[in-house]
Image (cartoon, rainbow, N blue to C red; front, top):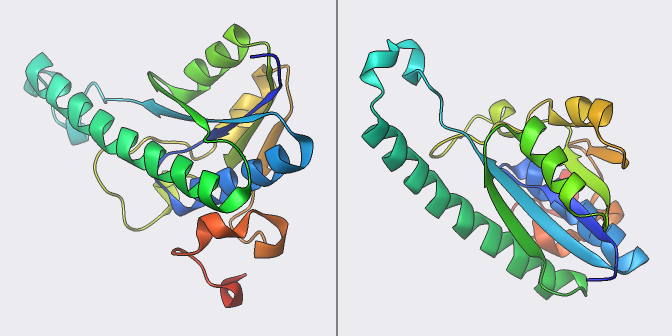
Length: 177
């Protein structure tokens, strides 16, 4: 791949979907490709209980369930972006580990990534979590201190006329902006 890549962090939250819609608009305006990344984390201690209760079998089951959910989410976001934003189907990356570690590793491995786009508030700030949270909240600030490419943090009240709005069709209406 010789063109540049704009990478959007997606965690299943509405804020991350908004960030992906902004990244899609940038990709459309600048050319190049869009990449979507989700990082999967499994806590070592479940819900504050003792670590001995968290077997490797349980961890593997949680991770497998989270992987299925994340793949479905990434595929759905990628298809919506392709359909509504006038760009090629985005690539997507599903990595295991802390996002503040794995996203810089991904950026370091791919010199074509020129920008990372994240929601200003992530999954942890929304009231309807589903499955295993992917914890992107506060990620932008941490990434901006470590990455050598620009990090764009998208606020949740970004107006629809500043994004590829078709991605948000089922989530927000124009009166919500």
